[in-house]
Length: 145
Image (cartoon, rainbow, N blue to C red):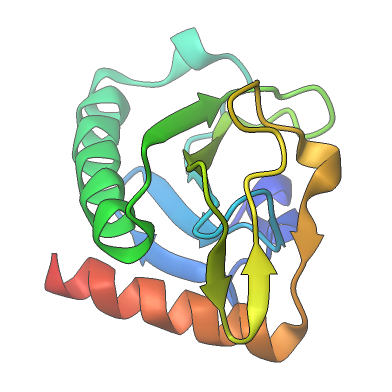
């Protein structure tokens, strides 16, 4: 059963991939093109409480996410944010970073805060059809990676 954080970030509609311990979701508000949320399936609110198996699984998830996002958006840097102030379940925001804007579905998606820390408040809320298409594209790339 998805936790509150996974549901808030669109599970199951935004689901790109699922492993034994993590859900990979397309972030509904795109900070940059390809922004994801990795949500731990375990009932934990502290990173140190993630099981050893969860940490091992996270390594696999991160490696695959980086491969998928590099092929999709050709990021120059990648940021992982673990904030957990509003949503207490263990999760990361994955923000691909780039100097010049990327285009998707007719939308111009700049990295509004490059080269500074990402500004989550400047994220672009995608229309449901665009979010669905982006999720499908990322899911296909994940399956092929």
